[in-house]
Length: 123
Image 1 (cartoon, one colour):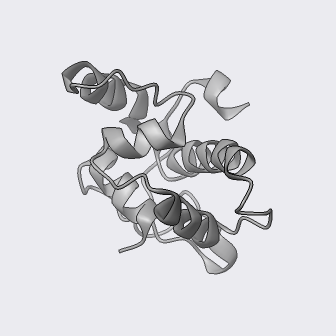
Image 2 (cartoon, rainbow, N blue to C red):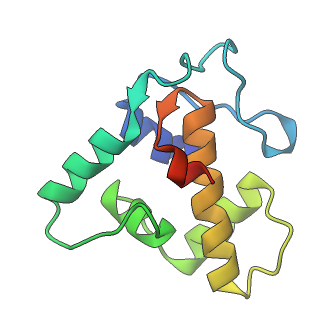
């Protein structure tokens, strides 16, 4: 399973499998495996996980914290692998820029695959 697939599976409870199309694009609504837009409240799920987590994690701003929150290895090598999986074309040695891009992409792909996320996280 892909790294994004693991993130999505954890958040969505395994109800949906994210199957990025060629080029790393998310499955479109109506595509087998994709949930109707807004059917899973990503914020509520991640906020609950954050409340129950021993560390104070800011999943709304940090890809590292989001990955930790869903029980994944947030190492630079895993983030580089996720960046490759999602089609990042920037310099992976610039981890700060890559991390910002990754967070935006993961949130956008969760929304595109049936996740309800606040508008401010999609901007």
